[in-house]
Image (cartoon, rainbow, N blue to C red; front, side, top):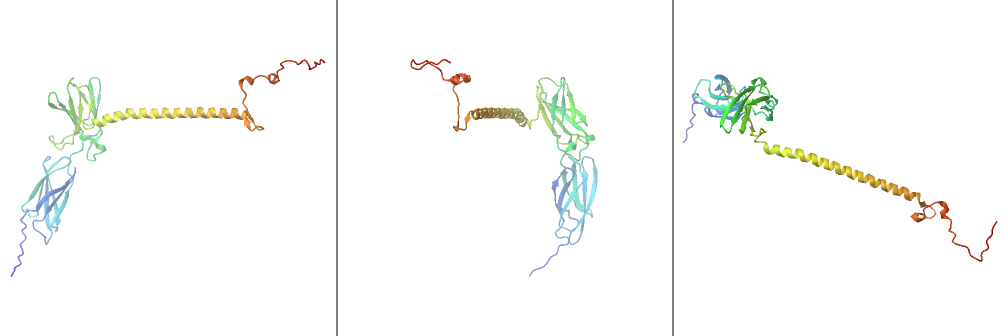
Length: 294
């Protein structure tokens, strides 16, 4: 024997398994399950988003019959903190969770230029890679003195550079630049950090080895290129001299070529002279040969 029991749906139960699927800078994807399996009708959910920084609330309505619900909360702020509450529209028991959105990225290419009595910090604008960043928000700069173990807030600027003065000799400093914080030091951007040693040279701790390798390559590559160019020019000069000597010898040989003999004729140095010297030399006269005088 058996009996079939059908449970009466209880709309006073809270949504189950509320969790975050993905969180970005300006949105968050959340997911939950209905209070009971296989709803036989559309269910209306209320999604309340409380901004813990700005102290504001927003409520969204989601109507679906699915047992598993996925919803995207939009128009959030980078680096924000939110409290999300999901419950049925009849204000039944609720499920809640907290979400922290991804903060803005750190400024790129933070560099130091040393002047006579101060230094200048330079960096690239965040607006080049962050569409949610407005230059009017500005940047804030902090400095950490490792010798004194003190962190100081230097100021805020809407420019891409900042002047730092009154640095003490023999002290090592760390500078950080980030998108300005909103609402009492919250919703800040990720900081870019740069080390400044006592000799007055700035160095990014995360890229120092790369910079050294780049500097060495910047010196070695031009030197090797000049050596290759010099060797190339030397080979060209030697080749041209070889061709010139070969052409001169060929012209000289052609000028002494005898078509009758089929070969070139070269005279020794003793045979060179005027045409009169080519006549046979008279060495003497024989007694039995009469001399005729005309």
